[in-house]
Length: 95
Length: 486
Image (cartoon, each protein chain N blue to C red):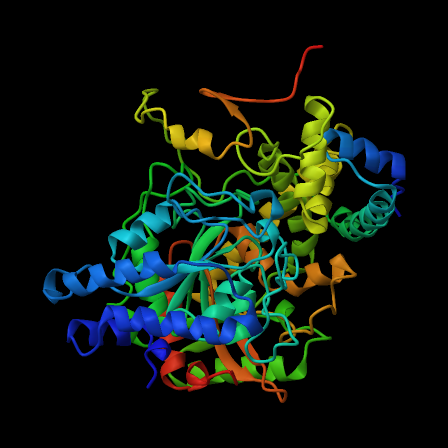
């Protein structure tokens, strides 16, 4: 059984920019263990010679010219939690 | 007959004959929503004023029926992960509870050009993550056939609304079964088109290598009509494929004589509800009576699909949902101590439990030291799963299976054990992993009066054969005409 510790779950939570309460971290640790045990079934399949899946639809990557086709839209700023003139406002980054 | 009970094709016919008015149709649907939605909670937003204004406009256009667009005056409900300009689009999440998009998704643009009326936005599992609609941050939608049961998920609001005649049709999205499972649980028709068939521009992304938009309708002809409207290349979605879209209605009535239908032994397993197995087997017998041939096939990697999915889908989710950082749109926690704390608190408060589970699992399988063991391994198994289908589809034209091992389960039954919930999608998930089209149609009821779904799976971009087979079956049965006791 894969051994996942609460510290490991908290480390992943930091990577994902999510704070977890102690109860959440406990429940998540249990969930991780269950799911990672379940997915161990994949290890019974030999896949050394199998190419990983990349795209359901193969073909050249569609390209387009690097041209601006739309005007700046002030409506985009209206959806932001905090703005200042034409800027998104965020908490202080540099002390 | 009450106007809200009409299908799209029936309503279109009557509207063009001027036998009914678009405004009356829209108002009948709005009244139906008012009468039933306290019990069902299918809708998150009802667009009363906008829909009535659009309907009045449709009536003007219908004065010259020949020049009116194909879906003129047809009220359609939209899953809330699909962006609608000026209409709140929440994705079933607190994170986007107040989000009013500044633009329409490509499929909405197409619906509007076709004259359809957006009647409202329907409930779903948060960010389309779930199989029961219980992960909606707002309220769980109920199954119209039994309000103590789930409608399936994640497009549960779409399927419940169509089954309860709260809309003539709906658009849903399907990442692992999210259109087909609720369609089966609610006794309506639902299709996941081939990956690449329909543009996802303006659809809130969950797992981008799997997500597709598709129709949820009262019958197969409506499914063909709605797919016709939304299918086709869109340069704004780089995975959308530039292939011609066939005339799906034209081939609906061609019958199934000579079609070879593959029956995979791995999809008839122990533990299935016996009534589901017998209904599916009877529907296959009905198709062979119409001239199709049933051929036994094998999809040997079926048992690995759910495990593969929960690595790939969560990995993609962890990346896609990184955008919800409280900066450009969505929820921002009011009190924070610097930028990182703002990110962390906004995400902790904004996301529900299942979304957090998937983001964290996805972050884990992509993180240093685990990538090869989980993510790379899963992508290799995904290749095997797709090969299974492509190989099988050499010896048959399409595949028939159940949609789910059981009929709709009770609310609360599986919420405490997410892994059990994941297994509800055991028969639908592989279709997304392989990128193929799949349709769910009603094929019977169990002894408790709950609908059972038949799944047909096709070759890439061969939705036409699925629709034609489903239509042939539907013409022999009356399952799709039954109405829930509301």
